[in-house]
Image 1 (cartoon, one colour):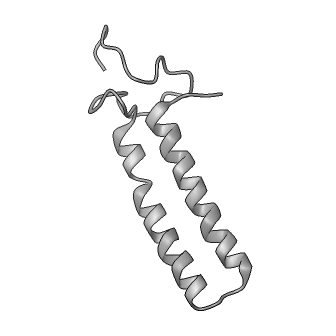
Image 2 (tube, rainbow, N blue to C red):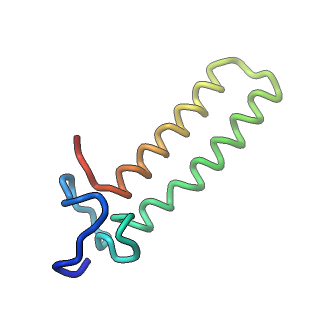
Length: 84
């Protein structure tokens, strides 16, 4: 992002990866890293629906839910680049 232009989330407080920050939107720090998690969420939702529909063991449901949570967390991280 060009100097002097502010972004929605404030200054970057985490590791700066190889993608330019806020190049496409002032709301998303690393746009392509953020949207690359969407297929993970979609496939995990498909797996979750399949596991529930076929009455698999509970561990498969937990697996897919944890993958969804992981992908959402990764999206939030790459969108904000904020470290708590």
